Length: 398
Image (cartoon, rainbow, N blue to C red; front, side, top):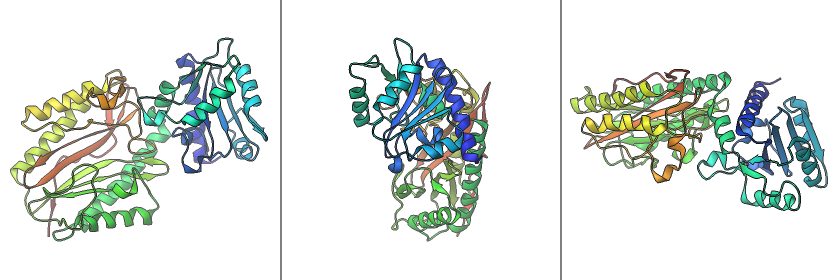
């Protein structure tokens, strides 16, 4: 059995408990032609892809049933992850209805993957929703579909020990590249040169990108650089007095890191940079001290936000933290303010085994953006840092 299959089985067993807690008869992932990606939840429950219309079903009594095209069936059978693999040739409808009739009660409640709050829980395309709706017309399953948001969000969020181990490995891999950046970046090099250097290292090591390749890593030097998800400029060079900032996420063995680090360009870090770094780190420290199961993300964000503004800095214009997993922005609950753009995600209670970033920064006039990002895992009574914190700003020389 491969490591991937072992993890898939861990997540399917986790899904059983989540389906039971949801009050639904079953949870179904319904997808097709997944070569371009498919439902975001698929990599958690399936080692491979699908071609024809397929139904992956987890029932409240613990059964894992896959109804797939006949050419997709053999690898699922060989994996050992599924209690029952049902192949079809001409069409899925009758087999699907028969299986659902067998596993659902007289008043069926079927969880499927649509969500208004979380893109990672919104994997059922509108077209496939219409296909299901048409299939269910005139049957006991008409009108039975409900959002699987609470299942898919929790399945993605609550990491198994294997998943946490892989995130640690991704962080370690990113740290090795950060160390190389500290050697490569110097006065006179431009942002694009650093960007290209990092991407060459990622590619040569066979790593993936935690977010879209075109914007990873984020490279900032000085006050005229694009803050946020901007593009590195060949016109902006590293100069003395700049804050030099990198935001990098690499994927190793299917799981991502997402870390921000800064340097001061010069021989000695000046007081304004030291003070900003100390305040940013204090925000992270205060937030981490309050992060534990049961709290809501907005409460933690408010602690960091107040720490920052009480120190005289402007508040950051984003959430303090997001979940990390198979990608850098892994969906689900966030540690952020109750703004319209975040929907209900800042009010979802934090759970044990969720992995979050804690990230913020300040803009220093004439120097640029000073941002630090760390990663923590929630424990039974608090949280643990998975990343080795950057408590001091190192110097970047000529």
